[in-house]
Amino acid sequence: MKEDRSIAPVLELRALKKSFGDNHVLKGFDLQLHEGEILVVMGKSGSGKSVMIKCLVGLMQADAGVIRIKGYNITELGQTELDILRTEIGFLFQGSALYDSMTVRENLEFPLRHHKEKLRITETNEQLVLEALENVGLAEAIDLMPAELSGGMKRRVALARALILKPRIILYDEPTTGLDPITSKEIIHLMRNIQKKYKTSALIITHDVDCARVIADRIILLVDGVNYIEGTYQELIRSDDPKVQAFFKT
Amino acid sequence: MKGPENIRSRAVSFFTEIGEISYFALRFFREVFRPPFEFRELIRQCYNIGNRSLLLVCVTGFILGLVFTLQSRPTLMEFGAESWMPSMVSISIVREIGPVIIALICAGRIGSGIGAELGSMRVTEQIDAMEVSGTNPFKYLVVTRIVATTLMLPLLIVIGDTVALLGSAMVENLKGAVSYQLYFNEVFDALKYSDIVPATIKSFFFGFAIGLVGCYKGYYCSKGTVGVGEASNAAVVYTSMLLFVIDFIAVFVTDIFFEVQ
Ligand SMILES: Nc1ncnc2c1ncn2[C@@H]1O[C@H](COP(=O)(O)OP(=O)(O)OP(=O)(O)O)[C@@H](O)[C@H]1O
Ligand SMILES: [Mg+2]
Image (cartoon, rainbow over all chains, first blue to last red; front, side, top):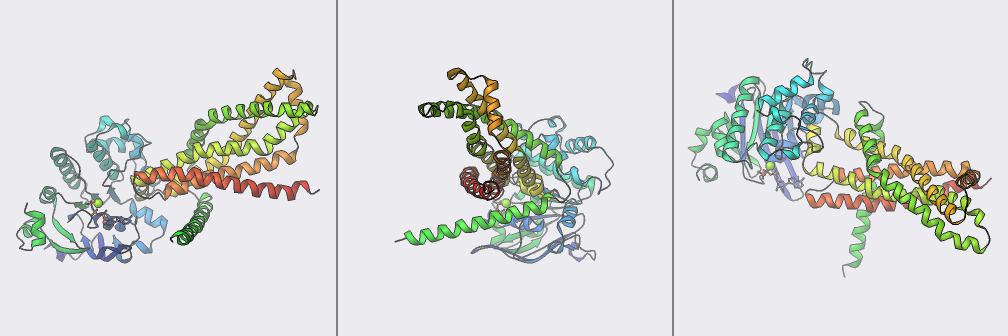
């Protein structure tokens, strides 16, 4: 059983709470991501998935709860330590978040600026950028501006940027939302290849059932601010709970 | 009536805003001297600012000098005091009109640009993306821009003043048959350190204010594209107000240091 691993999880959330005024978004959310695992978090639009993942990397301040990355409690870390820890995490934003004013190449080089020495990366920037772009099949777009890319290409460049520091943990916020089914499949395929090639752990947020079915080792349903149910895809589709069925039976 | 309550809540939000901007400025001073430094980005920002506003500053300066001289001529002639023209024009432009007008133009040009740029970066999560990639976005985006405006504004003001004086000299040359050489000799005779030094110090503060407010408004832009427009608009309005406040204080301080001798 996956849950019984004795080694510590690479990512851990305990009793995470976050409210915006009277809007109690997260009410005690728990999550554990183990080494090499692909964990999918599903939930309705507006259920707080993006809020959860932003608390996880420290972009948002949680109201209560414990957040551990590789065993470090991130609320106790100073800015420098947090920055170093963040280089081990790749983050794919829901809206890609490419830097408009830079070319694709400069976008990919950006994370390399301060951290190359610390991570003992020996390849040149050029090699790293090309390798990352080849991983997502967009080597020819290297000198384009983000405005010249389609939505799917942007997503892939963003993925390449998230991977450039060879992170051990990758967080994907809705990697397939807003893309056509074929491009979605390509992105899912890419995520799996990356997983195999670099043996990373991944946390994927999605409401795309297909994506969850293909890729997930384990699924957590986020309903009403808590982890409502947890299990493999096969376990969840057999559930009788109406809230769970609402997701999978359409 | 909702009137008084409205006024009170507005006053509260006004003072909250002042507090927040002060905190933002404090954070700037904490980070500006702490490595790593973003020199390349700083140079790029300086270039951008100069490039974006040089032509505008020159055109405005030229017209300012031209019009100012044309308007003052009849009055001075009435008193038979045309020969005072160079000293009068140069002192008023260098001390007051030049810095203020050019700073206002730059607030419109640079301040709004910074507000919109950072605002849209905030809204599209680009600032968040910088943060998770282990770069301090405050340092990379805010510190460089504020330093750049602080350094560039005095330069732009010197250029604008010079062009304004050229415009003025041209009018004198055409209408009063004063040679350029004579005009500028008079100008340099009239200008004292006590005119130039305070004006230069003042322009550093103007530059700082433009960068600070633009960055503050953009960096804390509320969600959505509407927020971006508001950020860029508010940057201009607040900066313009702040410029006059700084000017007032500067004149006050200059008075104490330079006149009472
Ligand atoms: N900065 C914020 N200020 C106030 N409320 C916020 C903020 N960010 C998110 N919220 C609220 O938190 C709730 C959850 O938002 P979140 O973006 O996490 O949803 P989501 O699960 O990611 O949805 P989607 O699938 O559409 O991306 C929403 O009700 C939203 O109104
Ligand atoms: Mg979301």
